Image (tube, rainbow, N blue to C red; front, side, top):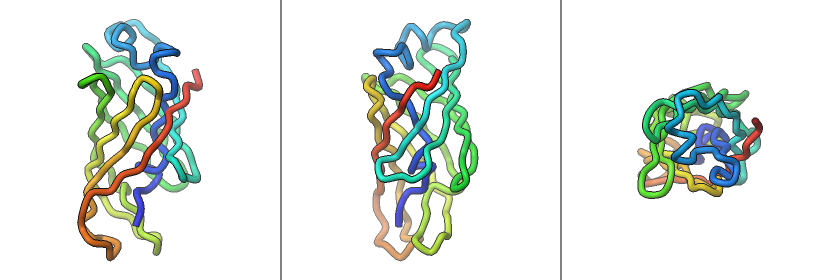
Length: 143
């Protein structure tokens, strides 16, 4: 059992501090233009694209494009304890070796260097013992 590209490749925010992405100043500027990132899960096969806009004080709205493996989704990320945190209910977050997919609430956390982890809880859908699952990802700024 694995986390699908939703957890597999839909977050792409690299060099957040260096490029200004997700910096507190950018996150608080209502006139800031949208920024685009590519999310690549470590070991993932298909990245996804995130379009990020400001949504309030230290808040970023993330629109994930989806790909041939996962459906599009959107959620808001908040600056918490020195990193960005986003919660999202995904209809296809858990993917089994037989191709079946299951919904799960996921949590994305990433730092200013664009290194992150997506995590969820596996209820044993793929025959594995129930428990936490996670996948690392990197984010890369496109524009």
